[in-house]
Image 1: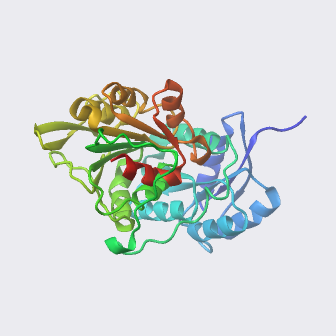
Image 2 (image 1 turned 30 degrees about the vertical axis):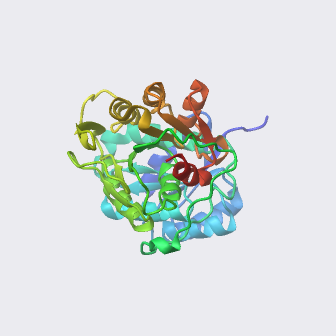
Image 3 (image 1 turned 120 degrees about the vertical axis):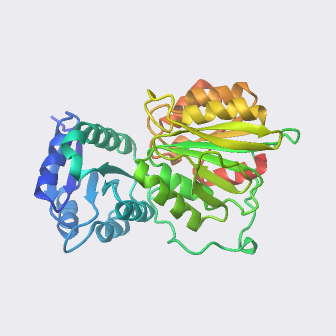
Length: 361
């Protein structure tokens, strides 16, 4: 009888964590841990001999650390990799380096409170393993992106070319772009924001599902590779052209109009009962109320359907909606929910989204 279980290799220098992670994964009948490895070099050897479908990879390990191992994996035997990341600033920075090297996503682990969070970690780990192995990821999707370099000057950036299939409605002008993303989103946001021109004429607001401790370092990293300014949103600050604001952890990002030409961020912990906080739905509902038809909503890769109801409200207010297409998503969940609702004006490959946005303004 053929074994259709997803085969997982666990790489971690801690014997306790190898056992704990293996037990979490093994609790799901569709997953099978086919081996464990104690460091990066051991992991590379096990990959060659065991041929796993996916690898979970720790970052800090002796002999060969996770980042070094990941680079070799992506160069010589590309496959889906999930990072296990500590909830520290250093852990966040290393995690984003891993995403640039080709890791598909990460699962945070808090070793100080492991017993309190083990169910949450298990659920996230299992769901992400299933999500990223549910379809074949093309080698292009796991390609290494360039290392961070200082912000280029305006002269070095060419305006994205207009896709031939897009027809501009000249009478509709946008005042804001609202973006939502989850699993696979950090890499997707890097690809989108890094290609927008410095003179991008409207403000951008972003909700990315991510541990609160990671959002500040993530915003700083995006700021380094983008011409536009990227920062974590602060309560009361204005939404301005050429600035991308990322919602902080544990707060919904909403908006209030101060006067006809100025809108400010309103951070709120309410509603507290949402599955995600920040929530794409809450941001988009507020955008629909404040900006109406002068808004553009973009939904990127992610599990679940956060953003579906909010983008429906934007659509009903005459806003325009763009969804990332299935082929370029790490997980086609959030975009699928929007597409199946029939509200997407445009379904676009990730690499075309920056150009589409420029031409919609």
